[in-house]
Amino acid sequence: MSKTLIKEMLTQVTRAIAHYKMIEPGDRVVVGLSGGKDSSALLFCLNRYRQKYLKKIPFELHGVHLDMGLGADIAPLKEYCRRLEIPLTIKPTDIATIIFDIRQETNPCSLCATLRRGALYNTVNDLGFNKVALAHHLDDTIETFFMSLLYNGNLKTFSPKTYLDRSDLTLIRPFVYVTEGQILELVAQENIPVVHNPCPANKKTKREETKQLIEALSQQYPDIREKFLTSLHNFNPKNLWPEKENKKGRWG
Image (cartoon, rainbow, N blue to C red; front, side, top):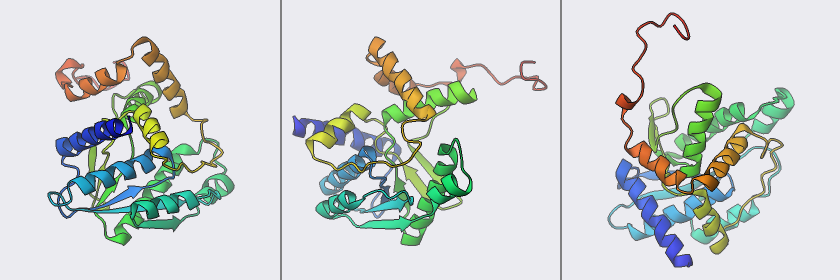
């Protein structure tokens, strides 16, 4: 069972990497490690991928954890990286102080994400690496689409691969074909440690609401994730409305 799941997930990761040329020989890849299940599972899979294609696609793998200043116990994460023999850099930040003490944000997630991105990219540049692997999976892709639609009126989601010209870094998301359910199975089967998230806003976000919406839809439409992935691959702009010729008003 465990070997079958790992093989299935490695196949999905390999396809995503190949489809979007995420990793090439000589790359220096940082995995952003929050201590949560997704990023720790990604590190596991990328390590297996690297071992499998060591001669064909040699690349470096390194973990970076941002210490938010919330007092999280990251000892299990340190031990996990030691077990995988992957270097781990821990970057202290004052993000929690800025958000909760100085700014006293009532809706902290957007600012927190911005500050975390900046701190992560700066750390990766300091280390001299050229790519950042983020653990966004297929469920995240779907949730981001619905959040953009419901809260911003946009039809959009994140890309599997994005080049950031300001920081000269490339973001890759090797888990875009992997479901959250598979990650949960992998974490349980391989005893991958999960660090408790002490953030006061944890599980109280719009994303959590959207996650519940997708889960409800999947009860009625069990193949919604597969259909969504197919629609992304088959997307044709001609199937949506053309741009308005009269842009004077919202509806005019």
